[in-house]
Length: 244
Image 1: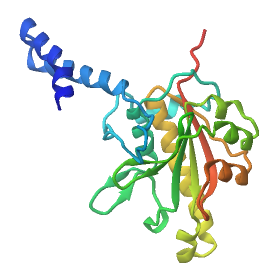
Image 2 (image 1 turned 180 degrees about the horizontal axis):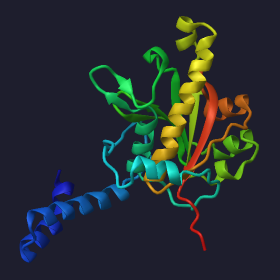
Image 3 (image 1 turned 180 degrees about the vertical axis):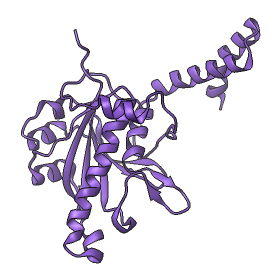
């Protein structure tokens, strides 16, 4: 609480001295908050098991139509790390809870059975997304990117990405109700979640690319996936390389 007060104090003093109106004051506070979020670190503290994600923003600066028009598969990224707010927004777009009362998520799911599990691979460890509570479970702090790159046939996009989002399918959650059709329903759902991420990345000024060429067993081993969690999609995300 003390840190928050100290952080906002310069903004308040500036408002008082300059006679800024309420609208300008709101803008200044927003800028201050954005600056704080930009500096938020993704790396877990020693011994930390869960990282609470900041709330997703429900309004952006770019229309859906613009995001669709600008979306491209981009494989080269700048070395900049993603902020916690950016990671929060991308995860929410993929599988975030959008109806708290009924527990419904951002991507449609056959029978609302939700067979997808989202894992993140960064240079500081492996994480698992928990939609209920909108948080990340810290699975390990070892850098496994080399193993993931090897399993993904050494694709440069996987190596350069600030974060690799790995979509895993737990087919049994759907096949127990729908039989073999459940496999198709699950794969369709992965596509829904992936497209949401691609469009959200554009809205954030980021880039992404869908990767399907990889060795399933290699990815599972690199991430130490639980039995029944089958990797079906890798989505490298990062800041696009600036055009010279």
